[in-house]
Length: 255
Ligand SMILES: [Zn+2]
Image 1 (spheres, rainbow, N blue to C red):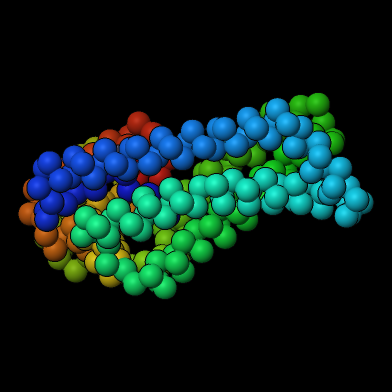
Image 2: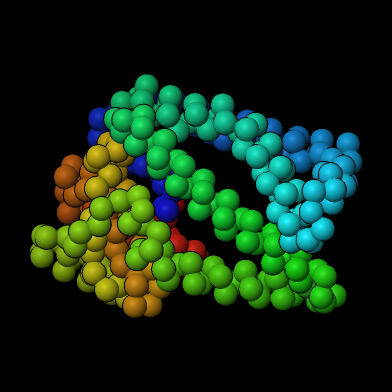
């Protein structure tokens, strides 16, 4: 799912917007510091070995032990990050009038994202540990697999992942659609079309992204962007996103 870090907003005065982003930065740094301290503490206290010994007592299966240790460490990390996540994704956006999604829908979105992240994370850890058991070149094989996975995920993101979070519809405005596709074409980024995501159901933040790969690569606009911004402003936002695809391939281009 795109995680917009740069959001465009009409309703916020510049000083207010600066304050909002400064608070978000502070929360982000706090989360990073907490996460680093957590991992350092686990490492220094020998928590990894202790957890591995515990897991070995529960199951004889190597994959099962890896899963248990990863789940325990991941749960600890998630719990530690809960207060800052709550502040940065719920309290602050609501206080600044950006988020109006009901709590239940917001929690459902967070749960889906967490489940997806946990499943991918666990699969990644299992693959690395499985490779460790069979080859000294595990690092090379793991890197190759991670690369292939990143490409596959980029390709399926618009068709499999994003519909879990948004209702996606083709942009109805043919003039704007042609204009944006022409801009993408000029930037050397081929796209199959322009889609609209119903962000207005959740929040007032506006953004765009270029997502997918090859035959799934498309331009995505939040409906908040098309509703509140002029075509040349939308073009400027898209130009930024196209820059990502030009330089950061195969990253999904959302920023
Ligand atoms: Zn960016």
